[in-house]
Image 1 (spheres, rainbow, N blue to C red):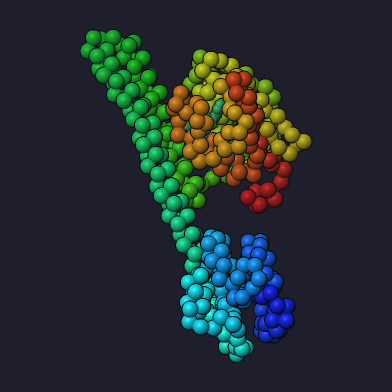
Image 2: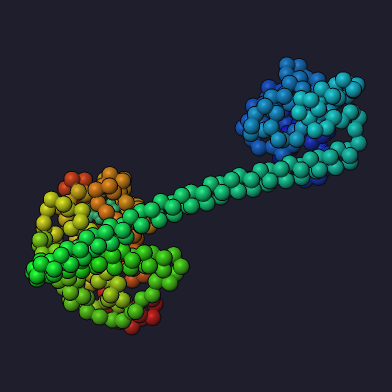
Length: 378
Ligand code: ADP
């Protein structure tokens, strides 16, 4: 839109007619003051400014417009019938004008100039936008690089911890063998095995995370009864953490369609988290139910540290760890992200209900398998 600023309405009407004939949208202001208000409120592509006006004159208006960051690049053309000598013309350019036309002017020349300045202005705006996008993109890259570096440091630390323990336990095994202490040797070998298992899970999680990123996480889907899979996962946890009791209630009594190893992975993850983030409690509740015959729902409830409300939404995103507890517990923030991906791929739902200091209840659902159509859909 073009803004015409002139204290004489007849001048505005004449100019408006010329410009509207060439399909330009036109707005007008009868004083410098009104023009300044309008430029701050609206978006103009060009301003045609009369020089001599009561109150603020054209030069003062142009200086103000050039001073606002929002309007500084809008091209200004001065029009004057009175102030025609060189001194005025240079003042016009100095105050921010792009051109200085003297009345009477040739309407065709004016239209040509208007078109050229508007084109230039559009190109300037496009360039500035592109520059802004580039600056943001560079910043986002830089940010990604920093996150990657932090992650590598954390991952190396997480991998090194079980490795250091393994080294220590192996020395103990050697010593026990030297002293013919068979039982001790067995004990240290068991601890070594546990650390190796930790290492294995970490490496699997790292591989899964990178497979998700490249869209290569594979699923071996088939129809199966869910209850034995659940029981098996709960048994694994009971054997791995004999110090904790997993109180299981309910049964699904249903079939689901999907990758049972991956579903077992989700259950193991929920349960190990429940144990890990409950340092002062040894009881975990595990409930299975059937919702409206359509969904199997699994709930894992602990009485652990809990999670602040404002952090709950981000739990299932990649590498996210709750800051308040991240120093106290080891981890890389990949487990729940992988769980979310697996559940989504099975068309299930997931979430958490938690209160800091009281505990958390993590759930996920899986659609019950009814007929073959479901397998074809996925
Ligand atoms: P990790 O345990 O390796 O950090 P996860 O993806 O499994 O990664 O979990 C992400 C974050 O969610 C954890 O860092 C922790 O802050 C929080 N969290 C997960 N499970 C629980 C839980 N049962 N109780 C409290 N916080 C939890």
